[in-house]
Length: 62
Image (tube, rainbow, N blue to C red; front, side, top):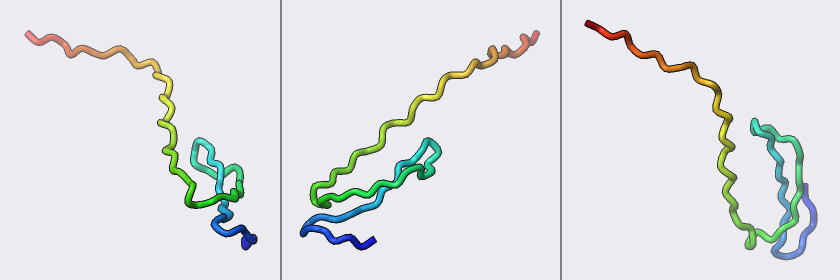
């Protein structure tokens, strides 16, 4: 989309992603690229620990 801007400003289109990485919402931002800072994504959430079956011991030989 060609929108007029002020000198040094620009429009960018962004997408909000769900947990699977699918786009669920579109956002249009009006910003100055020289002031944009990269923010790393948060670490993945730990998955709840499932119940593990008890470990089997090998049979004793001899």
